[in-house]
Image (cartoon, rainbow, N blue to C red; front, side, top):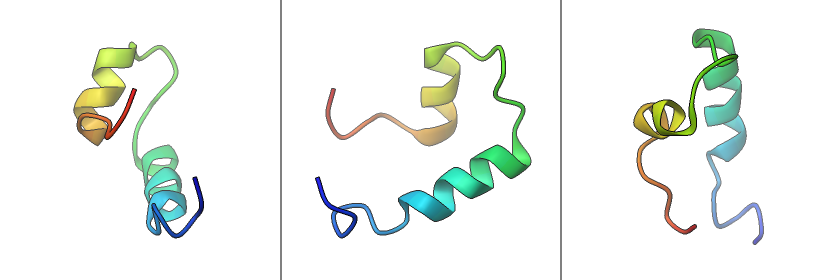
Length: 40
């Protein structure tokens, strides 16, 4: 997987870390914030 496949991933990660309390969240709670993954 290259960075060109997900060009906004770094910005999304920075926004997620800056604006949400992630510690203690369950996988389904994080998936709710991000939306369903494209692959598993």
